[in-house]
Amino acid sequence: MAVSIADIKKLREMTGAGMSDCKKALEVAEGDFDKAMEEIRKKGQAVAAKREAREAAQGTVVAKAAGKFAAVIALKCETDFVAKNDRFVGLANKILDLVLANKPKTMDEVLALPTEEGTVKDAIVAQSGVTGEKMELGGYEFVEGETTVAYNHFNGMLSTIVAFNQADASAEVTKNVALQVAAMNPVSVNSDSVPQEVKDKELEVAIEKSKEEQVAKAVEAALKKAGLNPNLVDSEDHIESNINKGWLTAAEAEQARQIKKTAAEQKLANMPEQMIQNIAKGRLNKFFKESCLVEQEFVQDSKLTVQQYMDQASKGLTVTAFKRINLNQD
Image 1 (cartoon, one colour):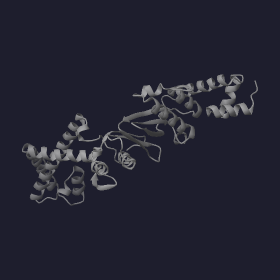
Image 2 (tube, rainbow, N blue to C red):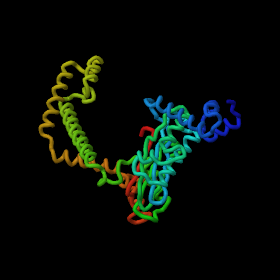
Image 3 (cartoon, rainbow, N blue to C red):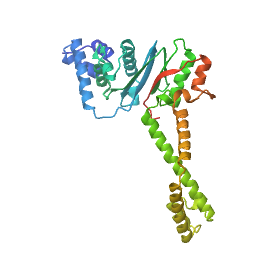
Image 4 (cartoon, helix red, strand yellow):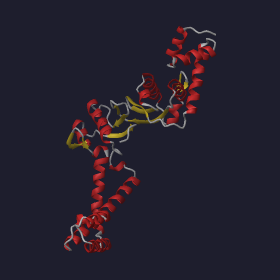
């Protein structure tokens, strides 16, 4: 049957689908709008199935706070063009509003929230049919606290949410802490909340690095004592290159190799364990200061830690939880 331009435009406004898709759907449905919308949904399912293996590396991240609850979601697609589309961004905000109203605990619960299309999952599939791209809910996080705040970075790819322990926390202070989370990407609220496996791994790396530094110092001292320039023999590639340039004789090169081997073995055999442990613990404390939110230098005043900044605003104010989603690589 023939369909009118007015009906095609009406279906387009309702679904966001292209004019040709709307025309075809109305023709198949013989002018029935409910059936036509079902045809559009079927197309979305077909597109989603066809593009399942493709990577959805673009998208938008949005966060909102409402009283004691804040949430952040990432809605992903294939191209930046679709990520900036008003309908795509609108769908992300619609999902987030549903989240704030229902406070789901898991991604599966978010996808099961009811919408006009059926569920959030159905709505994402339907939008996939409109754009012809793979779409997925690529991230969901929430925090709860006496006060919560959300920050959305201008590029639409990074958002943070933070919860605090005081109900009357300053809006300016909480926003600045959310900005800190965005800028400095901490791994935990404080050193106590760093997972033990992370602490163990960081200490292991710190011990190994400390030993390597002590060995390097011993080797350098031994080479200098023998009258050899450590910079000329710091690697086999440099040794060969410097022999070819005439800066090092073959005999000197062999002497350097022997000195490096002997000095390294002797230092490892007589490594002062307590000193290594002390150096490694210092490195671990540095990791905490760089990676734990309240112990970080405050980006707006390096003379203060984030905790000191919050204490200045309200004694005892602190962060109880935070989440950060970034679709760009940090």
